[in-house]
Length: 105
DNA sequence: GGCGTGACCCCAT
DNA sequence: TATGGGGCCACGC
Image (cartoon, rainbow, N blue to C red; front, side, top):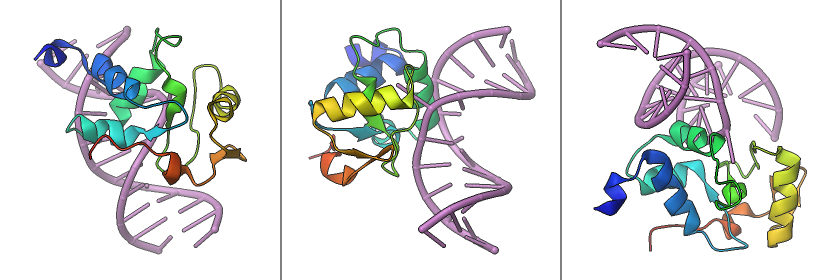
C-alpha cells in the first residue's frame, strides 16, 4: 500500500535498491517489475535522480548489455560497475546476463 | 488540458 | 552483423 503512495520514480528507486552489489539490472526489468512498459519513464526517473548518492542508478544498464547513459557520464558508470566487480568491455558488460538480477523468483 | 522530450526496447531491412 | 524506424509511459512546459 505504502508503495502505491510512492511516485513512479520512488518505486523505481525501491526496485533498484533490491539489486545487490556486483549485480546489474535493465530498464525493462524495472518496468516489468512495476507491471508497466514504461521503460522510457524509468530512464527519465533516473535522469532526474537527486539521490545519486543514495540510489545506485549506475547498476542499471540496457537490455543489449550496453552501459547506457549516466548522470556523471557513461565512462564514470563503467568505472563504478568495474568497481562493483562487473567486467566491462568496450562500454559493454561482458556476460551481462550473468550479472543481471531478476526480481522474479 | 495537450504536445514534446527522454539514462529505452523491439522488429524489420 | 549493423542501421533505421516505430512504439511504449511518465514528466515538464
